[in-house]
Image (tube, rainbow, N blue to C red):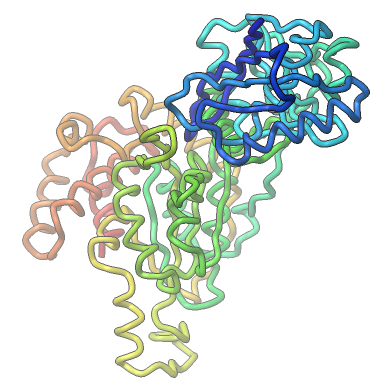
Length: 479
């Protein structure tokens, strides 16, 4: 008799259904054979399950066992199927029952305890979409799936497959915020930098902060996450799916991700991919902030690899289960010194770099990449003024985001064909733009970005039209 147990695996950020078929024969030499294109991690499951069942006191059938993983055309990876295989064998021995409307997911250790798996949230999303009523999941991961509509049972040891499984009660779960962002009010002075951060966050505009060491570039970049409105439920789900697929096991996190990689990061670590496709840091920072501190110190290959994701806001990669699409729409904020020593043009410190060294350093950031930053700001060391409270900025940003919802996107993502509709200029503003085009050598892309930034500045003032001062300020961030 063949026992069918439903489980699932992970393909990119999507769950994929896998049916585990277990047949315990009455003749032939004892042994376990797994078929259906199993990866080595799954082929090793037979030893994990065999040892765990013996250590739990179940014993193991002295028969020929065939385990088929359907569909057979697709290679299966990961340790998600351990629990389903154990359920199939125990059901074949009449020691438990495999419910046809239940999904079983979990890794089994040699002593029978159930370990966490990657990608539990997208796997449960798959189960919801395909009509499953319940799921059995590792008890270690109950906190990260509190928004699932399924009836969820937790399991800590395979003995519970026989003794009974506890149902999750969500009232005992608590959300928590793992980030400690820098408060904007804690940064002295830097009115221009704070204004630029406010505009950047309000319209989701990428930004490059230039300045000498110690002027507060990195602190301003880190403060951006603290003035953002909290993520919506849809954004929480997207952030949770990525965190789950990346292998983070934690309570449901309400905050936006903040990623700041070291400049020695590789292209695969930043963008993703590789032989065993993994989620890159640009995807892990989706709907949060990605800070590239000291941008010229990153490898040229890393910087050039950013160009397409900055435009498309998504990545498509080939994996064992086909082509998978990863979202990558973080707010990108980069910082840069004017030269390797950092003191070129400083009012009191002397630069020790040669002209050739400085030019080589500045050439590390290509023109096409520079052109993709919406806002360029130079932070001066002598600027001092009273700090602005971050709560004020947050209220203004929330209002600006509410205005942008009618456009179905952030201002930074307004399509070119919609620019004239969403970015109407009055006569004075159009005159300033025309004069800027005549005097400044700026690309068409830069003009479009300036219009989008001006639209954000107008939204912060709740103005339906872009005025003279709005376009003038927006153009100042392109010089």
